[in-house]
Length: 77
Image 1 (cartoon, helix red, strand yellow):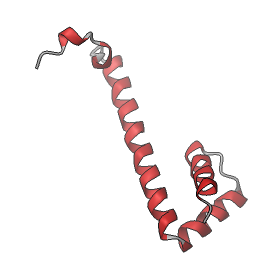
Image 2 (tube, rainbow, N blue to C red):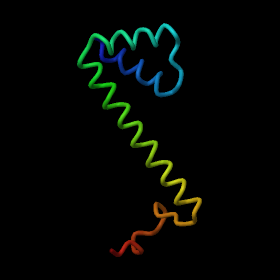
Image 3 (cartoon, rainbow, N blue to C red):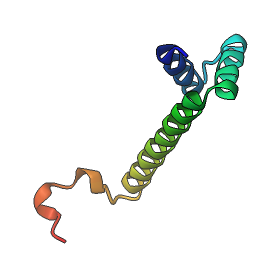
Image 4 (cartoon, rainbow, N blue to C red):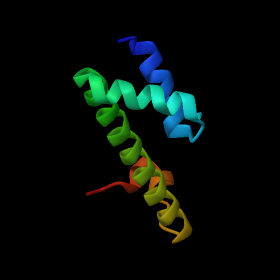
């Protein structure tokens, strides 16, 4: 398995730019390789976590909470 190619395919999947041929190639890799499945799972989980963090920050900002932009001296827990 070519790891670089796997990452290229995963990146294209994540960006919504996967062609029909590339989708078939990724599907084949995922069916036949435990390592490809582990890598895909880890990458997709990280993508999901990052997406949720960005959305939470956007909600906080829209709500006027703006936690991410407070000066350090205001963080007294």
